[in-house]
Length: 199
Image 1: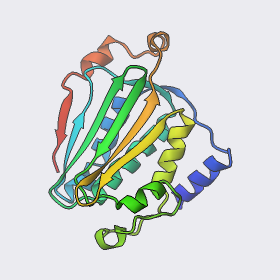
Image 2: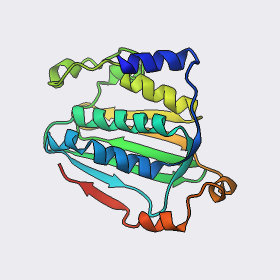
Image 3: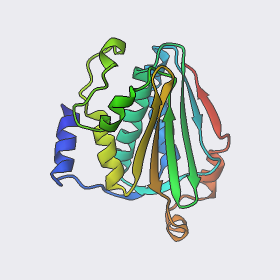
């Protein structure tokens, strides 16, 4: 119900992002740590690949947290036990790119054009989803959040092989980075760019 209320308020314009300088790498790390049990329960390994330095974006921290959590939890939910979920974050020129890739059941080709529609569930979900029935709002909410931040989202999937979601957001301009308070001490804290969160 919370997702329904959130997306309804967003669509009506009652909720606007409270944008600050956010280290997206830190947000992802926090989400993966706080919700590691989702993967552990299914013996799923989570690979987290990120740059050595912070990845600042001008964004609403709470919305970024919701975005990452929705994509991560979907990847775990629709993956068989013992598989791998990979989360990647990097900066490509003027863009910050976040990818969440799984080795799960995949999305049928005919469902891909509708995957971000409210209440839509892929035609193969019922036979694969052993947990509580989803609301069908998670990906719609992600798309709204991305658009509110001037970004874009894409999905690639092959049934039986897995799915990859790619979120592209505007990178923080250099002059704003200098005023952001993200300094060399933060860069040092992110050394060690590839981590495995064991399930």
